[in-house]
Length: 256
Ligand SMILES: [Zn+2]
Image 1 (cartoon, rainbow, N blue to C red):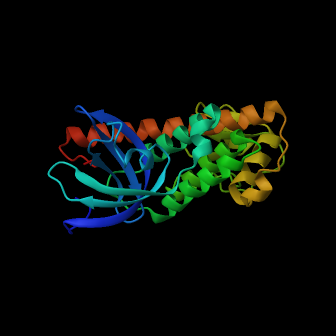
Image 2 (cartoon, rainbow, N blue to C red):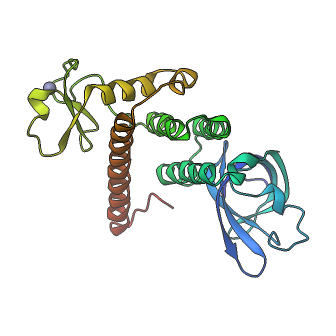
């Protein structure tokens, strides 16, 4: 249980939810102090519930919780920011779910990550105003990777350490970064990365969001950037899932 107190307060973002019993829901919360964990929202599916409106997905909410046997129980909920636009616009909803899922996948339960908490809130704010949600999503992916210690190496060859030259270089998901032509060409786990795509990735990794969101990319470069990040994330998550399974076989479950 996250808190020793019988009744305690926290701020939270609702990452996901599922129905439980007749009228309840189990919510997965992300909180600054206790990280990610599940709680019970009793009676929120009843039309008369006063809490329901404050416990929608993506809502930033102030909660009072009481310790329970399996899950702690929400006794009061007051939204701080509803991020209404993220629920009203289908495309933004899809992006917001994606942000939550990605964060959920990288963060183990009850592992506090206050910076990630701030990052997710910032990401929701940016997304609501974004002229280019696809680009906002790439920014979020790279910021999240940085935060959880998997930032891809985009400036030097991960094998020889030499700074990359302005030419076609290579990316390896397995090795978590770029390879120079000498080490990347013909390597089984590496793919060529056009110079423009590499420049964009570096820009997103190092520049402030206000500059990033003004980028104008050709559809081709956008697709290359998206595909590379997507494959890298997938690779990391599969590896993570595999190592979890392996540890479980040994009787040590890091997922709790
Ligand atoms: Zn090299």
